Image (cartoon, rainbow over all chains, first blue to last red; front, side, top):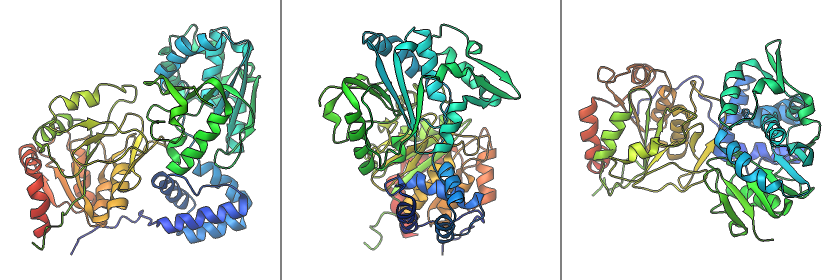
Length: 282
Length: 200
């Protein structure tokens, strides 16, 4: 006999139930979670069940189908919105020192933050562009599946508890100014200068179902693919490839890789360490 | 032989403060032809991406890799959770990473790795929890146990930080409590142990 102590917080969720949930959402609302990576998706679902004291996935499906307001909150909870200003400072240093000098040779250029979440990366990029004198040249789109986080991103306001982390990250990008130059602190919040993002178009876009909508010189899609299974990753890589000009650049998260995906041969590594790739074939 | 079937398909090891030297000694002694994968989740500084894997590799008898998202899980390799990501077992074939919230103040979190391993491999998991100053890993060990896996902790008296193994002992049934030298010899003989424990 196997002795066991069942933790009362342990909620069992079977893969089959996750499939039923995703199918119900797709049918009712058109959001497609069917090809999300199952290990992390399952953790998110368990978190939602606990948060709302719902006892089973079956009951969750009922609530989602009956209550569109609840579903809106569900989308916010289920999509991952942990990011920071200048996450991976070494990445931003390479963008500053190696990539932007190349883009600066183009008369103007387009940047897409794909799945931008609450916008920390958008602010980070805007600060880089300002400091490198390229802000005026850039046309920027920032998209996410979740309209609630887009609203937050447009407000450019973050909790003060992140201040030390933000400052430390920024200081490791070879900055040309001080972070204080771009924001002010009031009421326990960091309010960035909204002028920084006045040329940014925020737009709802679901990488899992929507098509490409513009052509870009540089796409940032960092730590997004990790939440998708390989089938969906292939779809999204194709979408990003179609959205890039020939000679355009794609940035992934530090531990994401293009290597095994179908269109890998259409990209060349620009900086393998920081996961920046260049589109070399149509 | 009725017990030819291997008891465990994967070894997961969690550790925090004070665990590095123990992990290092274990990797030094595991056989080169190890027939299962080892997956390590060791608490580490988030802004130090390089150096940890290399430090472990110096003495290790098997290759040490930091997996990228959806990388294959191969036997005979020690995988180290990368800094600032949770490492999860997506299926018996591949890993997945995530950047979700800290769990037990940690990313990578031992609970996250252990729970996903238990969910995927059920009873086929051997979990080892080492020295550490917080409670990460206790719930993960509990999940391993409830799915029928095998649990080992470093003896809190032997650990430089006893909190973590002690928390696991408090939380769930631990099959073996071993000090460093016994841990090292257990893993030096791991291929035999995989079968001996299947018979017992």
